[in-house]
Image (tube, each protein chain N blue to C red):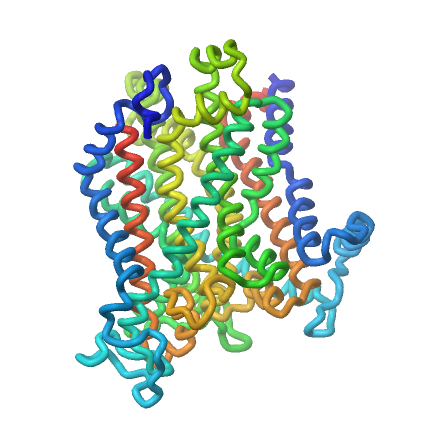
Length: 291
Length: 296
């Protein structure tokens, strides 16, 4: 991130010092470290979980179906006897692939749109901004329903739907940062050197708006996890037989009236911990850039 | 002054771009469901025309007109949303105001952090946990929202408490945060200092000067959350097996029942537009700067 080393000519939202300072203030932030700890735990589970879980998360065992938590099955077993503990540990894998990819797509598309609308302003800005606003008014769940009816269910659809739904929000953030930057002397200097618009946008301005983009990206990652979990729960996201949390809840919650709480509680807590972890980290990043 | 007021008011209404919003959505729905290669405009025009006359088409699955389904479902959803809103708006605002008046004290921390952490959780996660606590372990509340036939108002209310709680939790964080930051800004402003310095009692300052200004952004947020709320309803209604517009759309999407899907989404668009309009209206009523213009 060479961005923060360049002469700080701007009061861009949230940048005070060099990269190192931001980095150290992140390390001092309890919120950030707690969040990062939780997220790293789930990433470790996603990467290595299958090697140390006591059972195969996909192996059924009908005789021991719906067993309550015990020494043998810490979190009990689900309706076809799969070990809930193993499934919860390995279940982080799909959501931790899909949500970050969707966020990445949203960030790339949103940054490009934000740079264009903020740099050119005028009609380009008006037209694109109105379209983006209209897009933002539609709930993600509804967009996803329509897209999945039209395109069918797949991880790619989920990534594209969430990525494109979030892009306008990132575009809005980037746009307002660019609006402030483009008035500064270094942009005028670039224009006087007859640099192309693309060069000015991506080489001159982009490095200087990285901080707000980073903050917005971490916040969006939290919402992406929210959205992926919700879509999986609705049956429009990650598909069986994945031990994904949202999916497990959707296939088991019909029986909680019978008192089989362990089939859904641990998955729900897992989602809750991951979402809160990401949000704590995002809060820390936000704080580090703004203090 | 009248001219000024007249200029500002239509500006607000126009900014909401109501018609285009609803149309855009309907066009989107049609694009997705019918395929873009067909003569969209003519179809769309006749469909809109029929819709306005109350004919929403015929369901593929139920082999009967769509309208009764949509109207029933909308009514049910409104009940659920109403319960959630009636609970969350006053409590959320109160929470934010209390937090702001106790800025940086433990009470503020609890409200802000608590609100923030429940806001970021998906509705079905809080929903499941609430069902487990109140429905399965304590057995205080029914775990499904499907009340018995000919249930009275209070029975229905009883069945709606649990489903409305996850929506409450998500919205509480947003509303409280907005109310809090609005309050902090208003408390810090020159007019508040003036009001205090001219010797008005603290209570009057809060009620007449601070609250009115502080709540303006909050109202905008509440209205902007209707779009979100609708997304939340799809999830909650599915989780609690409640026959609302969200679960109607969900079922239609799964069964590829396009007439219901389109009618449902257009209905949501209209609801959203009305909510935005209502918020703009409320905003102009509450905003002294705009009202002054029309009074004189």
